[in-house]
Image 1 (cartoon, rainbow, N blue to C red):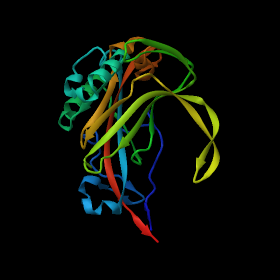
Image 2 (image 1 turned 180 degrees about the horizontal axis):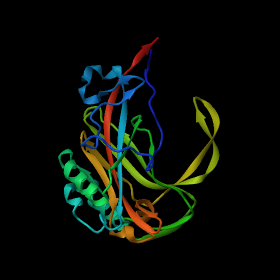
Image 3 (image 1 turned 30 degrees about the horizontal axis):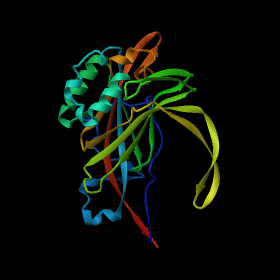
Image 4 (image 1 turned 60 degrees about the vertical axis):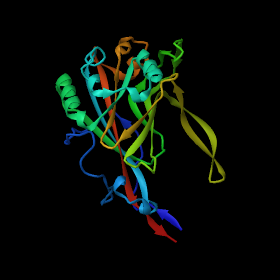
Length: 283
């Protein structure tokens, strides 16, 4: 017998445009997602013996804010509310050397964090959401449609590597995975990449047959990948470090935007949640 999902799981790309003002005090909306008129159930409320009767989806809540350059990269005010230890000292040091800083935010700290961000920007925080299957790659576009660019990356062995990247999108490639024995948490894996505008054609094997596909080329930026275990209600905050003010750094190319000769740095908050959709059995 086959289990079919009685809803359409949305899959796509998150881009920092067209977001609506959040109405909830927390990174996660208060209500479960509704797809095709059906409200999904938080997975941690599903009894273990009934898990086979559900198909899981992850709701990615993305909040972004742009603030004058230096507001976060030159200040410790925001980072004092975040736990940077889970990313590991080696990874954290590599990210910092490249102008990127990440930390885990707790649910109880959100009121203070959001207050700081709103004070810095003077504007509402922008929110967008997307439902994705667990284990499916999901690109979050930081800066779309970039021209050819030269980026210098410090590797974890402290060597400096520079290269020219083709025109394309500066993307944080993410993936949300779930441990079924701990459904209240989501493992988020992320790495910054340049996704080329030019597409290449190649044959791939699908269902025993070969099909011709067209896809972009992904260029990884050294050893800048990181992974967080995010308990329900918590969130990941990604922001610029001081090196982001160096125009050749990954932090500048991913987290600094230029608006009519004024530079703004971007703070990104990712808050994942797991939901269950009842599966429909079909003979």
